[in-house]
Length: 503
Image (cartoon, rainbow, N blue to C red; front, side, top):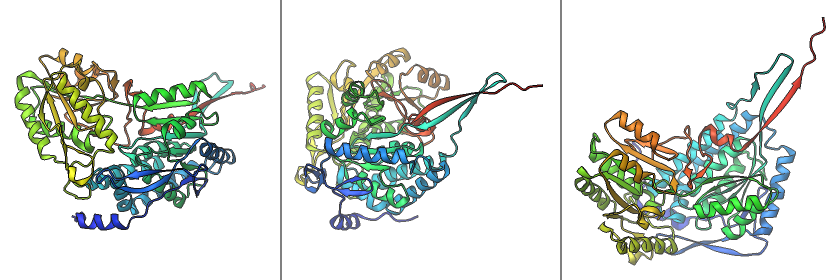
């Protein structure tokens, strides 16, 4: 088994790393027209990594014009599907070759542990591009069942220009979830990474060019939501906008679509996912370990995090003790240390927001059983201890609003119906989990949960082959699987009249 490099190795590589800092438009590096730049900060230390060009409305116009030219001349859309797939697979192979560089860049920019960046994020990214590359010539068109004198052809065509606006918690993986299927379908893409995490998206554009993705087909515009993001949402020549982020911003993109050209909008927004533990669970120790990781993995900065833990009251106290023990083991630490399980919160702004929720929980009567305070202040970074609240009621702020941090709300229940009522008492519907040894209960509860993904005796497991997305205000549309390719295509009906045979 290959030994994973130690902290000294990653620290040395970090000291030598150079970062991309310009916009990537039509296959070329460019400064923003305004000349503006914004800081990229290392959350683990609070130190400046670099400054990045800040795209604005004018830069969006240029990128859209170049992307449209790429659509019209067919340099990508008219390639045989098998050839598009070959180049996407080549991109996956190139990402594999640059795995260390990209994982380190992600860790420095976002604060997540290097072990997770390398083994989890990069593995998912490579799989996503390879799988969609393999799928390009597996998506068939259709012939409708018609009368003998007619043929009804149903074909899929690329939408044109897809704008992908992605978040800071999994910057490159969320980009892959959108870029890979959009490219597989033959579209041109304009990718806007979050301003907190622009670096790996810019590097991706460069690697895509190396893989044979033609200039103008993948453009990357780092910038702020109210400027670059809004410009993409309102642009009359953008055909589709795919977004992962907060429900609040998702609603803005719906408004922008209505105010402009009625572009397709696909949203994967917030979550407040219930993780339900029944007393008949076969392995409560495994469930407790999974419950801790469901909320504390990636510093709790996961849209589908198991942030509400619903435990049957007959086992509640003993189970909470198990989760506390698991959470106490997951101490925040230096993201460049391979032994670190929890890294830094993305920014001081986000840390302040999470601390506000912890204070609200205390004020509303919930009890802190673990954590609740900042740690590692001497580092200059934004670290928060894993936090567990007990005595939580469903109406409390910490049980209703997405915190996006390592904060777990524990609620009790006495019956299956009560568990379902609490679980579905949310404006969100992204993920949910059920832990039980009763297969009938597992299916029964899963059917009644209003969530896009339901895990049974597991949490946060999945693959490129299955769709991911939510119900209610968690959004609509799906990432991953063939369903993701569908959302970046238009259906066209071609009706052919056949002259009857003359005898």
